[in-house]
Length: 435
Image 1: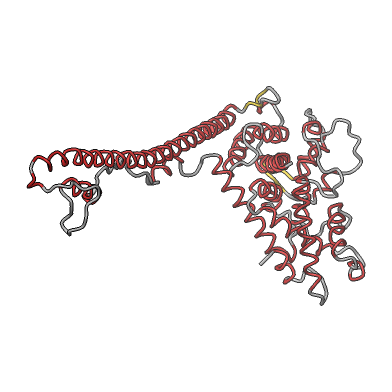
Image 2 (image 1 turned 30 degrees about the horizontal axis):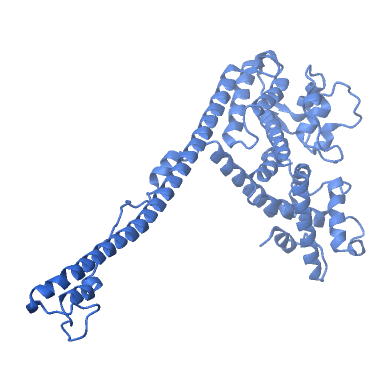
């Protein structure tokens, strides 16, 4: 059952009593799926809408989806005077569910965008909760499985190869040069006398019988010589034909085996390279965690204020690991920041407002580093809000914190804050890879 059908069953796709309208909505969902593929940057705002049933009707993405629906259902506003937010949100959820299938990068964008808001109860799933939860679970599983595979954290490829049985058979040359008695019997009969054992005239027969003595032997010798020559020539032809076929089959088997061996060798080289890259990445992550050194700031994280260190560490780690990273990477970041915070802060839990008040006076211009990617969206990610808050020009009139739709009473530890920022960075990186 499609996500759209489930949402229809939940009463979120208001189409009245006309069943044909459902097909129109499904077509609009298909069109929006294509739009997401063409414009991956829409994945983040689409996910923010999927996890927030109370998103403002004036959100730009709602307007885009409504246009796609109107192409299929021109009388939409005759049925819905106001913008049908839940119907449009259902189209978005269905498109996201379709988009993540078989696409780990898209799944990574969806999960990374929603993971932290979901973890800290900053979502409003509404009646679509069961479908959105399934979306997030599927996205998490698809992204994590692929990330583990790419990071070589699963079963080593070498062990997997040992389990595979060889399909090659022993190669051998089979040669058959034998001739049959019937092949030369006619010639031997002709050399022996005028007729064969059945009384039939032989082919080019010896006109004499053996009892005639010398006349018979004079005829027998040349005729028997011809028979022997024919026997030898026929055997040689059989030998040549058999050898040719056997060599052709043998060389074909050798070529197949060599091709297979070359492919295995190439695959081994790829696996070794991937394993080496994976091992280097893990070593770099552990080195970074132990050193507590910021390559971007050129100093120890201990020299930075904790709110700055949390953001900087997330940025630095994202430069070390691939955009699609396993969950263990996030927890390395969390443990690193937790260890750092325990050295500097007595109270590791702060209200979300605290972080933004501190970032306003940050010595680091995160607005320059974290360029906002969706200026036309009413809802923005935590990463966008951080960039807006710490801009050095300080000319923004809106309150970025209000645009994240977070509870101002929300409390986060420094490591939770850093992990949230890191997930947003990874989501943005995956979007760039999808373009």
